[in-house]
Length: 251
Image (tube, rainbow, N blue to C red; front, side, top):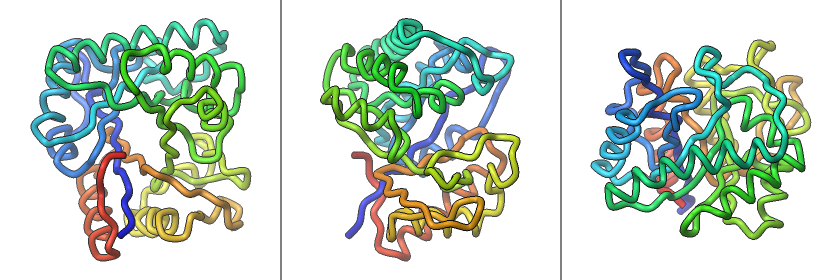
């Protein structure tokens, strides 16, 4: 039986501002990427989301982002490798402490938004990210874009790397994600997204935005908890995996 991890970006509420159906989504995923306060989230939300993850037996991950609350961490920002290291260690270290107090280990780190996309193709930033993850306590894994420079560099650093794919994002011919705001960047049709997910898990490939087959063989698939219909999408993915004999579990 094939196994796939279903991860979700979650815990992205902040103060009185609420985002996502965290309780409903958490019951359907196997690992959670919890916002660390820079692009979204705050201390209370981190604590509550960790408690929710433990209640459902979901692996706890840190989701560090750029310091950009207004832009939700999705706006490009020029940073140095040292800044990358500091951003990741600061945020993931804080979340790791919340997890430890709750009696749980930090399972993984997955960068958010523009921080993720920048590090995916930049060797120096990817190396700084890998160093930061390696300097955390325990055997913390890195979730990295399948086939990316980020994944390659982290492997060289000796990290446990979990290759990530996206069911609801369009891919370019080189295996990178089509930038948000460009045609076909977001797949909003649930049936099409489920079909793409099954293709990645069973065949290790997707069809790019230009119609070409691209190799993408993920260990984990991302679900964006902030998107409308996230709960319905998660249920559809779980039903499709079950029907195809694919088990959902954290690595």
